[in-house]
Length: 85
Image (cartoon, rainbow, N blue to C red; front, side):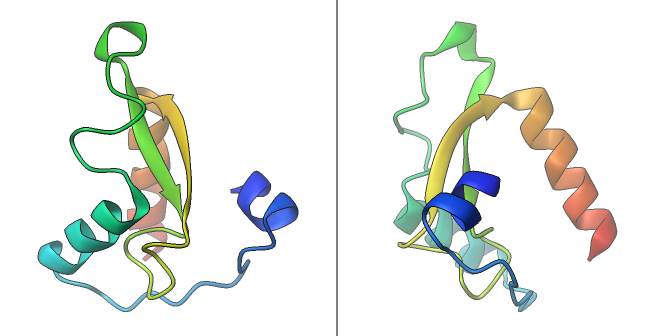
């Protein structure tokens, strides 16, 4: 998130629009974080693609910055975001 906001000047304020699972999947696909992505195959399958802006926000999608992160980190952040919402 820091890289996306500070280095890529992506928005720091996001709008949660309570998207359906289909809409979130479409936003992740547009961001490049689908099942087959640049993070697959790294570190024995313990790495996944994560995007910012989040797929759960109206800003999510094709302009997102993606990073390869550990599954544990991604799940932790997702849990924190869900609790916040």
